[in-house]
Image 1 (spheres, helix red, strand yellow):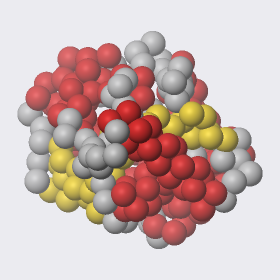
Image 2 (tube, protein in one colour):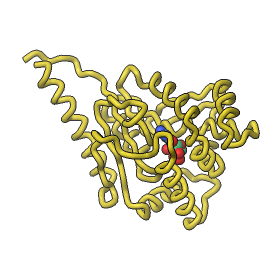
Image 3 (spheres, rainbow, N blue to C red):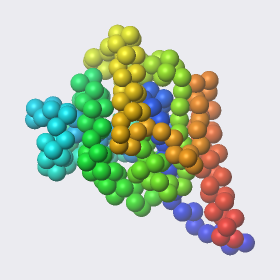
Image 4 (spheres, rainbow, N blue to C red):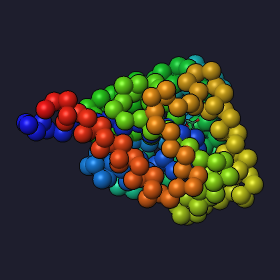
Length: 237
Ligand code: C5P
């Protein structure tokens, strides 16, 4: 049997807010020596620009003009993505509440989504990536090698998001009831928007992480990647 060099895969991880996608994507990417890309950070960067330029989140044409004049870059690192907007480091700023709300609102516009998807496809074209978001397995990489839809009970997600914010030492920690309401509102918007609503791709493996530890989820994700790699080795032998 001839061993073929291992192809660099495209791995899509989708799911609602607070489910732990970023952590799993970063850890999985680290194990594989791949880059992790947080697609949501790009929507966040555009929302930040809209805030700075006083462009309404609901004005699609104005948002598209802003997008056309913006340079949004993600720099993968072991701990997450560094986010650059027009060469300025906005990594911490894009996690604040006003930007979070804005990202959820700018992402409903079909043209904004098209623009983002095209950029995300360019970023991942060479493979060797774990990209996480809401539409990676359905729209950005419908032919991704591994598709995972990570889900969890809303109460568990609220708790995880709270812990994540505390761990980041964010200056603007919301009361937990406000945070829960905000998470539910974003969820609702993501799931009910007309353009690419949040849903599992038909061929995604759904992992309900409500009762699983981070290690267990990671283990399951690694198994899926190994299965895919073994299937390829088998076919080419
Ligand atoms: O994942 P994150 O919370 O950073 O995403 C911010 C917002 O961007 C989400 O609330 C969602 O509305 C939007 N988003 C999206 N499609 C993606 C990633 C994020 O619509 N692929």
